[in-house]
Structures are given as C-alpha cells and as structure tokens.
Image 1: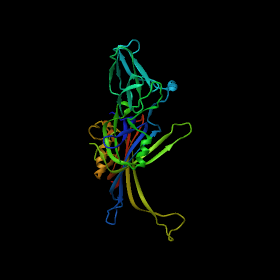
Image 2: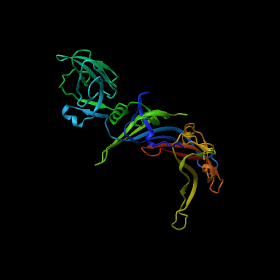
Image 3: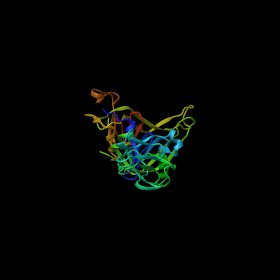
Image 4: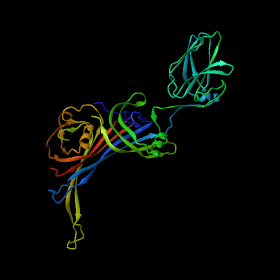
Length: 259
Length: 130
C-alpha cells in the first residue's frame, strides 16, 4: 500500500486551467457534507429513526505560513552582501571565469573581440538585455514577464564591448545607476492573492489532488474539483512564532470526484 | 463493512446507538426520581482511514470509493462485526454483529504536512439496526 503523505495532497486555486497551489501550506482539508432530514413519521414501523438526504454542500480549508512571494530582493550595489547570486550568463572563449552573476541588479560585462555571451534561464522577472554602443547609447533586447530565454550575442568588433543588463521594465540606464529588482515566486498562490480573491468575490476553480515535482506543486492525480469562494481568512501572529493563516473556501455547486 | 466489504486501511471506527428519551414524570410519580421513557432510537457510525489510491484487493473498499455512494445518495448496508483472516477483513458473525442501512452524510479528507493523509466518513442510520 502506498500511503499518500500530507505534503503530496494539496489544494490549488485560480481561474480555470491556471490553478496554482497555495504556497507554504502546512495542512489542508476537503469536507463533503450531506444535509439529512428526519422523515420518521407515524407511518414508520418500529422505533428507529428514518433519514433522508436532502442536499449536499462542501468546503475546503488550508493552513499555511504567512509569506510573500519574494524570492530575492535587490536594491543597490551597497546591499550586495545580502544578495543571492543568480547566474545569468556564460561567455565562451573568455579567459578566466566563464560565469557572470547578478549581484546588484546591474552587471556590466565586457566582451572581448570574438567572445560570445549566452544567457541562462534563472531569472523570473521583466528583464532587458542591453548592448552598450558607447556614448551612452544602448541597443535594447527586451524579454518580458518570464524566464529569460537562451540568447547569445557575439562581439564581432575588434575591441572590447560592454554589455549592460538592466532589470526594470526594459528601461535604459547608465552603468552606475541603481534600480530595484524583486524576483518573485510565480508558481504558487500567496496570502495577498487570496485576500484579493476574497475581496473581489472571485469564484475560483479548486483542485484537490496528489502533487509531485518541485516543491510538491505539480498536480499528478486529481481527486476532486469544484468551484468555490474564499469565505474566511484568519491570520494569527503569536509572539516568537511564525505567523500563520487559515483560509476557508465554501463550495458553489457540485464537487466532482475523479473516477 | 460497507456493502459486505471492509473499508480498507482503516485506523479507527465507531458505532453509536442512541435512544431519544422523554421525561414522563408526573404528579402521579412517587418519590423524587425522574421517570424516563424511550421514545425513539437512532444510530450512526464513523470510520477513519489512511488515504491511498492503491487497490485494496478483494473484500476491501477504497476509502475514496465512498464518495460516489455519498453523492448518489446510495443507501448502503453497514455491518459492524468482529473480523479475522487475511487483512482482518473476514466477518466473524460474532455476538457484536450489528447490521443496518445508512447514508454517508459526511466525508472529510485531511492532509497535514509530513503526516499520512487521512479520510473520515460519517454514516447516519435509517431504519432498524439488527
């Protein structure tokens, strides 16, 4: 018998086909209830109660740690001691280290003649890659809203070329400017989003099933689906403990079970 | 047992019979003691199991299989009895045996992090228990 561990049974919510796991969940439950009516009457034989199912309802709940979706936050070069190094690009043909990292949101890379830079998929945020043409002129190569796709650029000139990476909605900036970057976890739903759903009375698609993969977030086997409103959010902040919240969903219509 | 099959991977079950009583003490009653009378009988049962999607084999009912019985308002035959044999699923027809028909009126699945997921089911009896 393969028991299903709690961390592999999760609730996902969102619009249809865009459901995401509720992040940092510590527990979840799905509850189906039948409303029963006592139909015992004078016509009933014996002393035993006779019951009848009148209707069904369902609800679900999640208990989770309160967290925002920030993976890393980078402000200025002076904050570099606290920053996560994110490998961004490798350079073929370069002497010395072939890996270049973002430490402060802005990294100027010098390509020598005939060197090729190849970007790697490590950053989720709006980004821009710029080629510095000199005299404060930049050629902009922009990738928005997602993973940085692989891109190569070769310095075909006879002299060194500076490539400047800027991560602020594709804005052009000088080499020594500073900007704010927040790298976010977009693969799950966090408390702020749930609060937004509740406030806007959004009817959510709810999935309940067995999950696998990175952070146990990929739905592998569906057990039940339905639509629901978020009807209760309770945030608890006890001294010297992690802040937690509970989120209640009240089902609307049928809870469908996978056969 | 539901429909002759044990609910597989059960960790606990309960069986509850209740009498509805009424105080029939009157001025005609002697002494200070309340006189009660049984007006009706009702029963219910519950089970708690580990969640698994593994085939329980013969004479076993997957806990999640009872979802469809519930939403289809299926009147199930419930048997509470001592069991033995393979996987403890063979009913012994013991002195404890009770049988009746019931609706499934509540199912709750709980999945706590780093614990086995569990499913609990509530049954509400309708009609006589024999």
